[in-house]
View 1: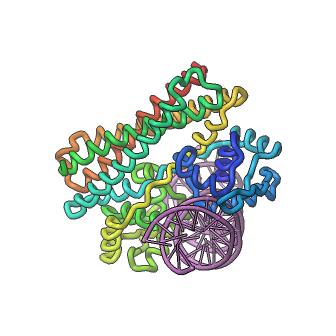
View 2 (view 1 turned 30 degrees about the horizontal axis):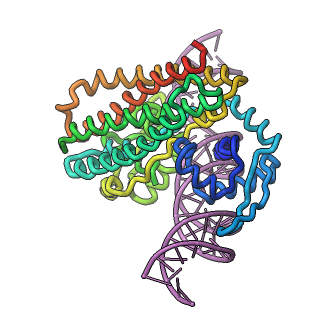
View 3 (view 1 turned 30 degrees about the vertical axis):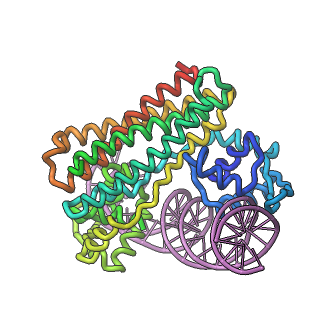
Amino acid sequence: MALAHAIMTALLEDDLSGYELARDFETSLGFFWQASHQQIYLELRKLSDKQWLSKREVSQRGKPNKIVYGLTKAGREALAAWVYSSTRTQAGKDDLLVKLYNLDPGNTAHLAGEITARREEMMRRLYLYEKIRRRHYSDPESLPTRRKGVYLALSLGIAQGERFLAWCDEALVLLGTV
Amino acid sequence: MALAHAIMTALLEDDLSGYELARDFETSLGFFWQASHQQIYLELRKLSDKQWLSKREVSQRGKPNKIVYGLTKAGREALAAWVYSSTRTQAGKDDLLVKLYNLDPGNTAHLAGEITARREEMMRRLYLYEKIRRRHYSDPESLPTRRKGVYLALSLGIAQGERFLAWCDEALVLLGTV
DNA sequence: CAAAGTTATGCAAAATGATGCATAAAGCAG
DNA sequence: CTGCTTTATGCATCATTTTGCATAACTTTG
């Protein structure tokens, strides 16, 4: 019941097609909730059947036609109600940490490599985050309410990301690869 | 293929029963990978069928008998090989952040409440983390290799946890509830 | 103009995970 | 000696996620 709400959240401001949603999920909301296009199309159909989303076909020039979805009144109400539902405390599952429990002299170099790769990936992500923050959220105090929420999510992403980078450096030192 | 390896990792040092594993998963490794007892029992059976774990029944006084599992040679080899397998970059799915995208004047108080609850939960967890660190990992440089890995996982948990607390405070200020 | 790439949508099967239900032995509190 | 708690194990079902496959319109590159 969570992917459905993430999709509806992405549709709060703009109507989007499945393809556009899948693309946006790789950035933006996708930083906090990712999904494959198959999942998204399936969920869109379900939500549409439930009358939480409306759909309309849009002709395009130079591209195949697309099906654009938008929130219905019932959808908006369901989403608003969901915000009050209980949140089960989140997973936080990470292969890398389990792998670290298996650290030994033989695989130290490999794991240091994985940490380095993660570090680089996080750098790229932070670069994106920062770009978005500078462009749209430079003055959080003066944002309208909803945008403040988006800003907070982004700001957690940045804070955790930066802390992760610092941890990577500490880890690489301890592993003796620096 | 991940819960299986988390379970085997937990069995690296000690042989354990399903019940003990489920209990340990609520602390320790469970900080980074959680599972219900049902999942664990099921996985133990599969791993046992695959000959990656051996089992033996242990009679107890004052308690029902238990079935204790231990890594076989094949299991250790499979686990060691898994460390080198590709790690798909991790999910990071969190309801709370999606909910924040839905922030509006009506639900601000509720979401501030959720953040406060998360903050308190994290405080409790950090208290545990810190206790473990002080007791077993006060001098990381001098630990044997494998323990260094465990230390690093713990240290990431602490770092991210502390950063999360700080974010909660910032968020509560911005939401105007302080 | 053929091949490769992007935009666009979707089904089916398999793996994985979560939830609910069920059982049972033993100790302890009243 | 009855009911509650802890220890202990497990099945069945449902939901979610991943993976593989499939199609099709249109553009760009060689």
